[in-house]
Amino acid sequence: MNDLALYVRYLGISLRGQMQYRVSFVLQTFGHFLVTAIEFISIWVLFDRFDRLHDWSLAEVAVFYGFINVSFALADAFGRGFDMFGNMVKSGDFDRVLLRPRSTVVQLAGQELTLRRVGRLIQGAAVLAWGCHALELTLTTERVALAVLVVGGNFALFSGLVVVQATMAFWTVETLELMNSFTYGGVHAAQYPISIYGKWLRRFFTFIVPLAATSYFPIVAFLNRPDPLGSPAWMAWVTPLAGFAFLAGSLCLWRVGVRHYTSTGS
Amino acid sequence: MRPLIAIISARFRLLLQYRAAALAGLCTQVVFGLIIMMVYQAFYRSAPDTQHPLSIGQVITYVWLGQALLAMLPWNGDPEIRALVRSGGVAYELLRPVDLYIYWYARAIALRTAPTLLRAVPMVIMAMTMFGMKPPSDVGSAVGFAIVLVGTLAMSCAITVLVGITMMWTISGEGIIYLLPSVVTLLSGMLVPIPLFPAWAQPILEILPFRALVDAPYRVYLGDIPLEQLGWILLHQWVWIVVLIVLGRHLLKRGLTRLVVQGG
Image 1: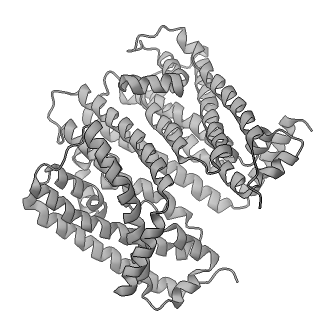
Image 2 (image 1 turned 90 degrees about the vertical axis):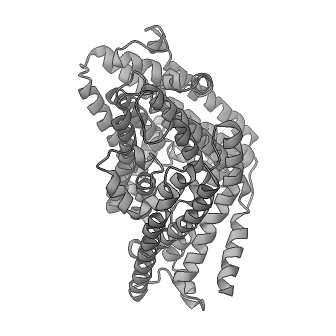
């Protein structure tokens, strides 16, 4: 069995497992939907008071918000195995993973596909759809291509962040909550166009965690409006690749970590 | 009284052990605080001429106050009580020679104060030196803030225990626990200060209990709620605290009569 088939099989098992608790699944999904919906209410409240955010309207911010939440929900659902990795190192269970003649990445990624994240996904998609509708954006091939690029790039970036966070556990044993400021902080920051922030925060989200590259530039092109930061139009097609580069880099780091692993025993 | 003080101090010392977690949490909160602050600054810059209920300087202080006191919000139930109900260990709790509600309430006091103390002091020092947080507007507001904050703690603990008690019905405790942080942060004014809400929503938010957790103490600190109104604020706060405690005790009594001890 090759890695892909194995991965698909792992996911199948995880899905069937979760479907054993159907009521719990429905409630959790609904809960997730409500939680993210409340987040959007707070953005709406601010727009109701201030009307505009610089030269951005609520509908435009909704597009940013929708894209980020859709991609984060996907990354969160698929990356759950890495998210729980700290416990695995602590208990020494990672030894078992190493004993199997398969890639560690496939085994961890296949641990769980968290279905209840569908709640955030639906909410994000609904806000995105509303934003597009309010702005009267037509569905062109270019837009669809950009949308795929945005979701793909952000998915790769967030997955990369989860892998980096898991990799830290090789050295610290405990999963560092510190990384949450990058993931959740990033999600929170990128819900708004990055041009509204101060220079250093913008730099941070461009060069260290390249959220500006994976979301801001292509979404500005998606909205088909001039960039207040003055970036040229072609950039939108190139910068999302930074997300994939980030994921590739984090997988390299993961390899180094695996080599460094010492079991906790017990 | 003595056993209660013992419970609080033991739990308190236990929770103070998690210093690394507190440090990591502190960093995360600084990042969040900065992002939230910049979002407000951007909004205020978009409409510089209009008169807003709170000035940007006040909002910045409000944001950092919120980050400093975040751990005091009832954003979860006591995780150990949840585990006890699940595993059946709650049976041991019933054997203790103290009133169960008061015992759980004492645990909640420790849960809400220890992490707050660890985080609030460094957070306030950082925010005041680097990020533009201001001290209370005058001595009166500082004293008023301290008085309201006592009620905030009392209410936060009452909600924490209430949520723990609902666990007896749901066992897994997913439902309420899951929605709690969002509901509390939105309705208390943590996400957006209540004066910035649309006019129609404000009377509703001011009647609900949650404003006593964030809106009331923070705005007294800012001097935005004048001290003459302090009486009303405290009345609203303590009436709700009594209601929540009575409700909690009642539910606990009912819960115990139908409690099934899980496991063997």
